[in-house]
Length: 75
Image 1 (tube, rainbow, N blue to C red):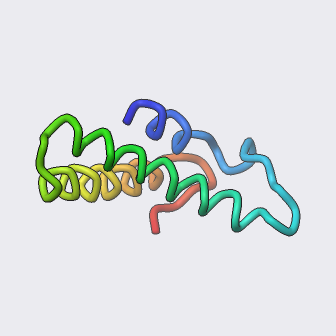
Image 2: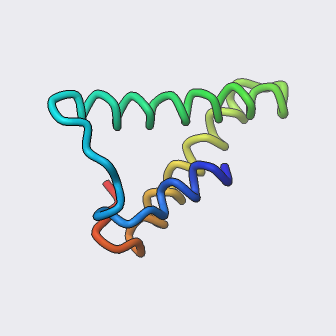
């Protein structure tokens, strides 16, 4: 969660672009980070539904956090 928070706090002008594969790299990285979070939450709670709730609530809080970062927006 700390790593996700730190990365999502990066201002838009400091985020590298990856040319033609920019969308795939960024969305793939986003999906991978949240998949890892879900797996870790599942291991911590022992319950799939609790892990899903934790992951979704954290994703919502992360998008809200991005509303306050220069050049970023929560979507």
